Image (cartoon, rainbow, N blue to C red; front, side, top):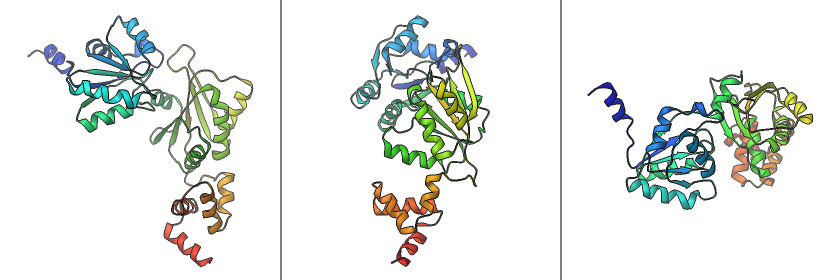
Length: 295
């Protein structure tokens, strides 16, 4: 068999397979030849937004059947897509931009396929988080992806508190209309001197990478209107990083009052003890001993 035929056989579309297709985050030229081939030959395409994916296909001169698959219909639509895959059809999954299943409902579809024994493969390509990380100028050896912070106050506060202990570079996504409040929340927890890179319009003509501090970013966007979707790359803390003012106040409490604080946030007695022990840097059993000694 010639090298060409072997390559064609290797790249042939396989029925009953879900293909995760990474699409451009701005520059159409970033779409790979393999991605174009898969989009051209699969039986159908599951798209986060059929309008956006339709525009992409039109630019490529491709016409394939599409179904919508997004956050608010994933529970109903996911099993139906899996049924078609089990019947032998091949499907390409596309998010609006970037890699499916990263801060994306595609995560659920991959899980369903794994549970049903459906083959899943990926056509690698663009990912806004990794692209921004490489441009940030911050350490890349260890990093964690946090996606979008929770909107509701309690889980948002808890997530922000967890970031206090993180020594790896952190990656967040944020919408322009929420950027100012998110920067304010981050400063409250991490302080204003922590380094950050704010990346927007990646791979586009107006690409911008702002390397500054959390305080510097907040000051800039007091007078400048945030525009475009942002990827925030935040410097991790050191092992001896100063704690936030809120954390310092809790550590000044007695062990019993510290546990009571967390109970008042809605945690069970057991979870409150675990949270307080972690924050005080002591084993859970040691905190139990201190609580009993106070009685």
